Image 1 (cartoon, helix red, strand yellow):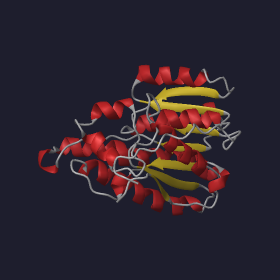
Image 2 (tube, helix red, strand yellow):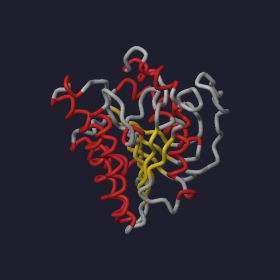
Image 3 (cartoon, one colour):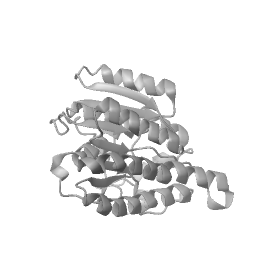
Image 4 (cartoon, one colour):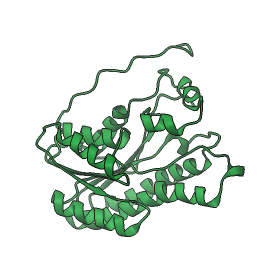
Length: 266
């Protein structure tokens, strides 16, 4: 395959009832990114109820309305949550437990990045990326496990990144946070497995959406996309598909795994 060859996006995959009858909670699900794609896929896979959260109220409500328009019959709930604030995390998990009748699936999608070389990075910039991306994942997992462990069931999927494995200029804070998510996934998973709960993670390379285009520097995304074996970025729903697999019974023996959703060559 040549450097310039681009393989077409495959047809959108229809639902197969992978999450039939289950409840789902997803963080950072407003807008057009992986979180919303996962919420849409969860409904298409037959979940009975779903709660989405975000820090952007207008986008969150718009996302909830779009999910309701799918007409699947699934209950759709929305609640604001900043995962850097423990009280908001607790409120979100408590609300999800009540409104969903218990959380069967948690997808930790909240994360924050940016482009900044170490020499230019402030403590505040470093701390914020790690607080949202790594600490937020820990806070949500901790709160959810306290609900799941007494029931001896539940599934948690974390959103990591290939940058947890690979080097890229200007990404030291984000890469450190995502490497932390990977390590946290593995360690928390062996603890949770004793209670019949599965924790795994996806590790996307580049999934294109509107907000990523706005956040990236000129030429950054184009250069990264050229490194992809398919010659294109992933669609957000292609990442969400793997999340649905990990949430389903098909992944029933998977514990602490990090699944790369990437065609990027090392």
